[in-house]
Image (tube, rainbow, N blue to C red; front, side, top):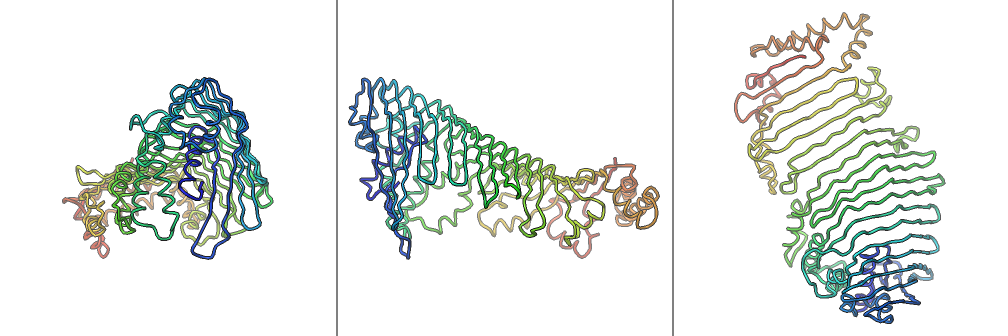
Length: 593
């Protein structure tokens, strides 16, 4: 909402904020003119009017005429009176807001009607209850009809103090309202009809902002005056204001009962549903988690996407805010480049479950992309200089058909084994241990249902804090110094060997039972020959032979470096020419089960 000067825009902005905090369905009242240094479309002229036929009050400390002026936008002028308002009840049967925009010869008109705005039991600026009966919007292209909205313990004075319109009694976060409830409604446009469910929240709190609303308005106006050439001081002020806002609000959990839309997309019937959403409680500097249940999108005759749940985990903005608060007055692009990593918020990750996709392949009009994912989870933590030092990412039941004639060697091999569909999973979990200067690899695994699974775990030593240094050269040097201390591998055969032997038997005119002992002896001899001179080479050969023969389904191999800190970059570079050069530097053991 923009009008032609800070003085004239402040009342409208303040009025809108008053209604939007108390009643989220409130309109955005605006007058706007656009400008550009380049050739641009004609400016949009926007005008609005507010009609309030009647205001009924009982025992009000403010007159009906003044209340009418306040509701029409004169909040700033009467802020002190509002903050101390007393009344048994205030009832506004109807508020009609008409917004008209004009560009060249094209005129658009929107009418928003609020009915039955009621505040009761108002003592010293705190209303025992506030409610809005109904909100209607008509634009000619879109119509909306939303039902009742209500809240309790609405502190008008504290809300005005948040925006600096009255002097704050306390700098602390205080309750603005409780027991918020919106019954939802409908929206209809030319190609789509939507129904929205109810929204509820137990409590909303806020504290006074360090930048008053008048100062915010002046800052935005100054930045609008020349958007292509900002004064660095303005950017610094804006960034510090933004950091302050991020710590000024606190909410309880908010629940949304979902939405459902039906319409037409390029001539095909479209269906879009969300069963519900839950936003966790917001606290200063922490953006809450958001969980969406049962997303269902379908375009008739084209494709569909189904998702049982998507959860965006909470994000900690504390470090970002602390840095933004120190932005220098003469901040420039170089400052943001230098501090890019420190500005990164600490996001905890996201998770999803029950994903089913069936859509056309954009690269092949005769093919489709069909993928199911049972579950996926990304968890990040222990951030250092903008980098998570703890990572856990996993997925299960990744189900997809194996396409034919792709030219991809791996896919062609799967098809050759008779595998036309895969059901796979993976996990990568690792964390940096600052006390031991090591990276503990909990698990690196991949698995295929009825095929096999491979799991790795181990320790990377000499992983100092310099790995996460802001200086790229320092971090690179630290990365060159890490070393593999230990590595444990586990291979489980869940049916893959049977498939491979069946193919081999067919090609050689034999049977799998006859080939197994032959391949087992061959594997044993190869291992013993490769590890000649290594302690327990014979035992390792026996373990591998048992696994290949099928008498054991699990093969476990442990490798540990003999010397500290472990196998470094130089060792692996030497092994490129002579792989056996590593054998004298490690202890190896194997066991089959």
